[in-house]
Image (cartoon, rainbow, N blue to C red; front, side, top):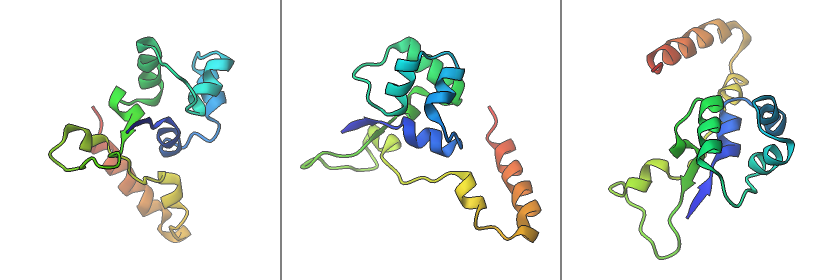
Length: 118
């Protein structure tokens, strides 16, 4: 089953108020509420593009997939790449770091970030 992954993507990005974030980035109030709540029935290519721009992601990042009953989910299937995963945010990880280790933690995060720049 293909589902929207926007709530999780915003959590990963540390966006605590998704509707306000979307309104700030050009979406109407109604559209913002529907997208933030993953309640939209359809989404236009223009909206997908705008979401990808503001969330710095690919269209496939806006969706996740899990196998329906009776379907086999294997690594060889292309949808496996966007399977549903329990991913937290960096902010959640940082909460468990001792204060005296925070500088080292942030340096390592910066190193990883630099390795993933396009």
